[in-house]
Image (cartoon, rainbow, N blue to C red; front, side, top):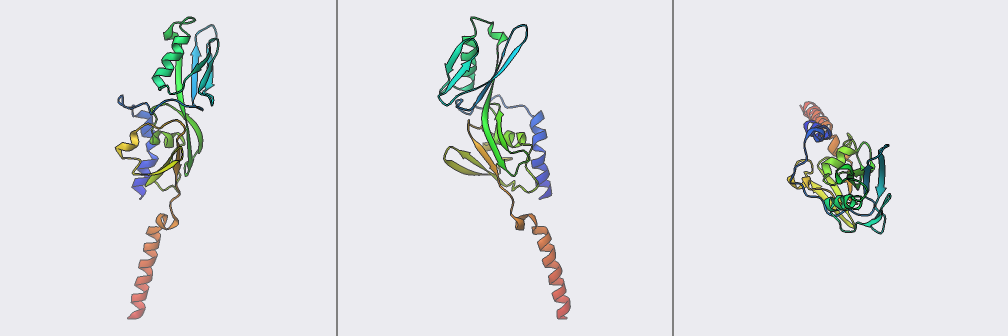
Length: 201
């Protein structure tokens, strides 16, 4: 139990040094609530954090609105650079995309967070500063739209490396009291058994 917990608590550190696989998929199109961080050149470099609205529109400074419905991350970034092409060189326009993901339950810093489009469940839990000492690390719950799915062995299974989708929520359950204290309970039962044997002699 202890070694398993240590392995999971170490995940945030491992994610800081482990590169994202170049074969990772995008995780689907961007959606309402996702964010775009835009940096434009100039005497004072402007940094704008923009949010896709409920209509799927992204309002861009100086150039107007862009409909981004069903756009994959790379396509959205290219479309933004194209709109700014008449004002700046494409290489001078930086576009960073972030998906809106929610992590709650037994994590150290639950809440809404904005993550890279290639982020996985492990990345999301790490961004929430990892699981608490009371977490049931045998599984997590992935909530996607109206569907709730229990995912076992999420920290090691290859399926869990697939990117999250915009709007996903991840819940880390609390481990049951009995499971957390099974060693103590077994020890107590052993002592009681020894006492019972001694008294029966």
